[in-house]
Image (cartoon, rainbow, N blue to C red; front, side):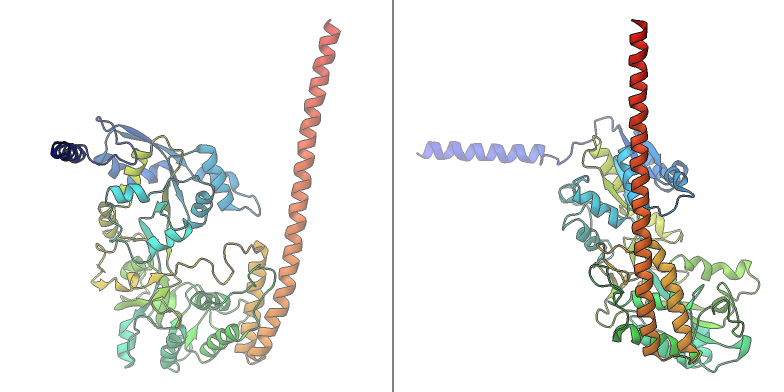
Length: 496
């Protein structure tokens, strides 16, 4: 009995030693000893691919070749066509070229996951202990949400918006500086402190909606809220409610009191047209909501624009929803890199995706301010001596959807512009004291419902016409085949 026990113990030790020597079996095959491999990857064009990633990657893996599928060719083919569903066209493009690595957005990633066309990265990430802790909080959760809890892709960059402010204007007028996690109402309250400072072309505004119209400011405000324009099925407009009325009241009062400036309607000649971004860069606006790419403007504009002033600037987080002050609706992911489930080159593809999303590329990206921000937080701590805390402080909202509805709500594209015109008209009526907020909200509801029905009917008629034309085209093709076959048979008979 003792002898058997010793033999069993010896066998166990041998197995343990072998496991230690050979290690855990890799979930995907390693590269060959020569390090060679080949990857077909989708990118905008070949030159920009090598400039952004390919050249750097080939320094580390000189024997891995790329075949770059030029996505700009797809966009060229679609130029001039109406009612194009670019997301659907992108999926068709991927299916046609069958790349190993694809560059997709969240919506298309979700569709590809549901169709079983993407490789699940969880196992290889766990085995190789790939660092996910260095990512901005919430971004990995956002990708997992669309992957049904699994991770099917990684993104090296994200975008967000923040409030930039002119610190000198606040100090000059003894007004406290903006702070992180302010709501839109708090932004407007702070803006109102500038009302009455200056007049005419020398008027100072607290908040400036850059390139913005009345409806654009309204949409920006709505983005931070949980308000929805439609019912869950997208069949009815839901605007005449307390929530939407409160937004209308906040915006119109702030504009009427000259705390906030938006570009006036083009047919209103009584209001000054500033255009572009002059107000902020001329020192006539204290705050502005902008993307991360605005940094390059705010740092260097005075060097080439003689009318602009060098600004002592700062930045705080974009306005938040008071119900979720630690989250932002203004952040999102740039391109997500995924691997095809049927790729024959998974190891080489993973090495590329890992490299693109690794610390080396994040460090390189942090040194050049191109617009997008690195998703890894440890490298970009400040810009021009200013802390980048505002970019990384808030978690992106993981919940999909916006004021226009969720992924299951489809609205005709023609509706958006017509609804914007209706909304702008009614907001202006409130600003001019021609209507109350209640009257304007009721008008938006009624006219918007009519427009929604009209655009849905137009879309339905268009689809029916397209289907009919497609059927006729198919029938004509079949008839030509039949005629060709009949002619061939007749020719054969005549020859006989």
